[in-house]
Length: 56
Image (cartoon, rainbow, N blue to C red; front, side, top):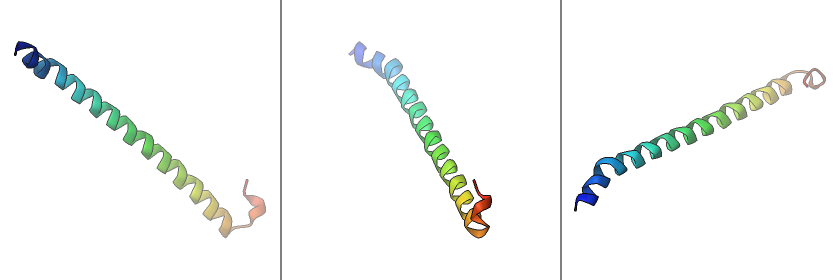
C-alpha cells in the first residue's frame, strides 16, 4: 500500500509534467510548420501578382 502511495505522490506528478512538456513541444513544432508554410504561400501569392521573372 505504501508503494502505491509513493508512486501517486512522486511518480505520477513527474509523468504528468513530462507529458505536458512533450505536448507543449509538439504544439510548438506544429506552429513552426504552419508559420513556415504561410510564409511560403505568401511568397507564391505575391509572385503570382507580380512579374514572375522578378521572383526567386
